[in-house]
Length: 173
Image (cartoon, rainbow, N blue to C red; front, top):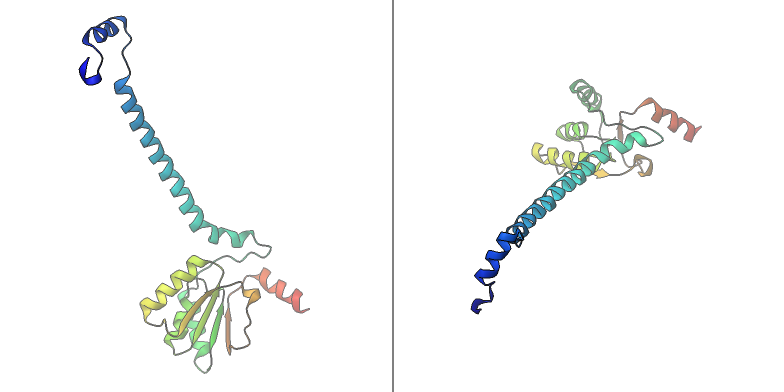
């Protein structure tokens, strides 16, 4: 037969015998397969995103010395600024978190630097400094506080947990 199709007589016989070629099923299973890949991709992408965002917040709790992120309150920032009023020189905030203290010090005219382990908090701090217009005098770095030299800073701010102070006593004692 011309056109390469199945002769009408053969199709009629196949329909009567119940053996119909699965032409419509092939397209339908292809659509189901595409939806499955799409669903798997969305779920997988979501899990990767949650892991990427949550890991920097969870891993400090798994360290030998727990270093959680606890945002500074307005009263704590006010007290730090009050203590800095009669001082000069560069300031460092160890474990700067979301950068509130560094930004407040930069607004008071200090050259201020914050060191933080959590990259998301560092990026957020940089964004906040830019938004507040102090990005030139407020800098943020991703770093472990035990691996930074603080000798060039005249003012050191740290809000630590008791376990951290005990560790420092063990190192110096």
